[in-house]
Image 1: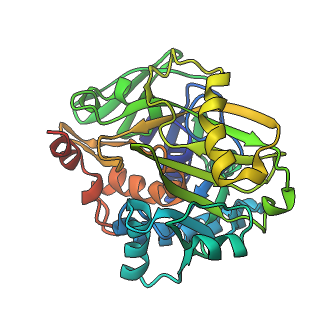
Image 2: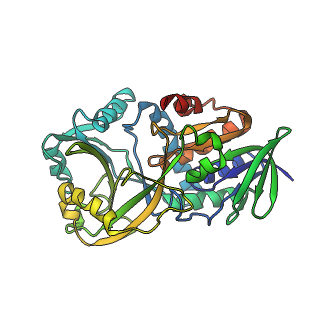
Image 3: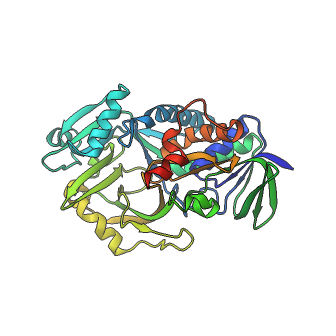
Amino acid sequence: MTYDVIVLGIGGMGSATVYELAKRGRTVLGLEQFNIAHEFGSSHGISRIIRLAYAEDPRYVPLLRRAYQRWREIETLANERLLFITGGVDGGPESGAIVQGSLRSCKEHALPHELLSATELRRRFPAFHFSKGMVAVYQPDAGFLLSERAIIAYVMAAQALGAEIHACERVRSWEVERGRVLVRTDRASYQARSLVITAGSWAAKLVPLLRKPRLAVPERQVVIWTQPRRPEYFRFGALPIFNMDAAEGKNINHYYGLPIYGYPGFKFGKYHHFEEEVDPDRMDRESHRRDENLLRPAIRKYFPDADGPTMALKTCLFTNSPDEHFVVDLHPDFPNVAVAAGFSGHGFKFASVMGEILADLALDGGSARFDLGLFSLTRSRKSIR
């Protein structure tokens, strides 16, 4: 059998893509080397942030508007709540990248928002203890997604439409012969008219052009959950998700966090943690005291009422491009192969809309819905020269 499309990697992006292709009536095979909703990549655990006032670049906002719509659609289909609105805080020095970037997105796209001083922020949300000189952009549409449940919802919806999905099957190689894609795994070989590669931290192992220049670099990340001393400040409904810059010595550190939900603790992390580049097949997946020691000082300083016992420390993977924008494009040598990589650590929220975009690329060779120039392979190559 020759499939219309094969999708490699059934995490956030891959599961949504398989669903979208099946929804369009195409024969599709999804291949995943681990279990469905596994703990070895970038999408495991309970929750991931979603926010509309996008400090990274205003060009993300149209994608986010569509992403919110598509998340609500899969919720309805799965009869399960996956998107929770909490409001969101983008905080830091008023002249800093996060605050100014968030304000720019709000102004360019007419998003409702408020600019709050540190005092005003704490009066409204007592969990925050921002330093003098820090401010916050509050945007009411932010929240979080149930990441593993979302992957499962997409997989089940795709299966109901006839998609074939194989877990615990590792891809060994792929090639294009006479315009057809041949994929070899540790179990069998398969053919398709098109291929979509959404392999997360394994993308560069499957797509050599991502290695030089380094367009998809895996990085070890650790997140902590703490039991708050004042849980009423950190429960769902009391605490917005947040994304913040903090000037600490000569460094600007970037932190994020979510309210208590589905696990007995306040979730807190530091972007790029120890900046440890890793091989995803060999990385240290255990968490250590030094990981906690990196995170605790910021909790004590900015969220002192959360500085209770540790409930969990968990590792995951980021996969970074040089400018931290995504890589979403057709392979320059094979127009029937779409590549999507470099989504961590801010990509999961886009999975619902990326399913549409990657289906467009696989079937039509492009996307008429969105300008993907920000994510092109050509852009990524130029950005690190």
